[in-house]
Image (cartoon, rainbow, N blue to C red):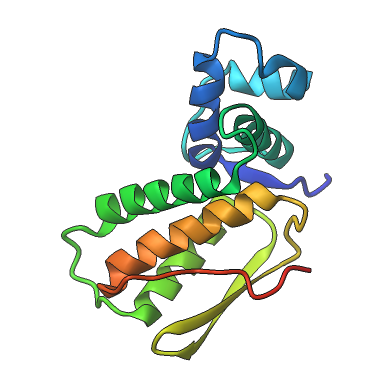
Amino acid sequence: MVNMKQSKGSMIKTFIVGIRADKSGAYDALLNEEDKQVIHSKILDSIWYPYGTYKRSFNTVTKVFAKGNMEIVRRWGRDRGKEITNRLYRGAQIKRDLRTAVALYNRFFKLWFNFGKQTAEIISENEVNLSYEDFDMDFEAFYYTAIGWIESAFSILTGKKIIAKFLSKS
C-alpha cells in the first residue's frame, strides 16, 4: 500500500464550508472530481482525507474568496489559532510561556498531517525558529496561515504580542 499524504478533516472542513456555500460556480473549474466527491461527503474532524484535496480546496478559497491576498490568509490563520487555542486552553492549568506554546504547536502539526515534520528551536525569550521538512514547499497559503496561527496562539499562550515573519524559504 502506498503511503498517501493526508490531512485531518478538521483542517479541510473550514474550506469546504465556504465552497459548499458558494452558488456561483466559481470553485468548480478549480477542483477535480475526487475533490468534489470529498467536498460533498460528510467531513469528520478526526478522519484522514487526501492531502491534495485539502491543498486544492485551500488554494481555491484563497484564489476566489481572498483574491490571492496572503494578508487575508494570514488573518484567517490568526482567527483560527485564536479560536482553537481559546477553546482548548482557556481554563487549562498549563504554564503560559514560549516553551509551552512551541510544544503545543508541534503537537498540533502532528495531529493535522500524516507526513512532514515541523521543528522549533527556541533562540531566546522572544525568538523561535520554525522549520518544515518533507512538507509541501509550494503551498504558499499554508505558510501564511501558519504564521497567523503562530501569532495568535503564541500571543495567547505567552501573554505577549507576537509578530511572526519568514526568515527564509527554500
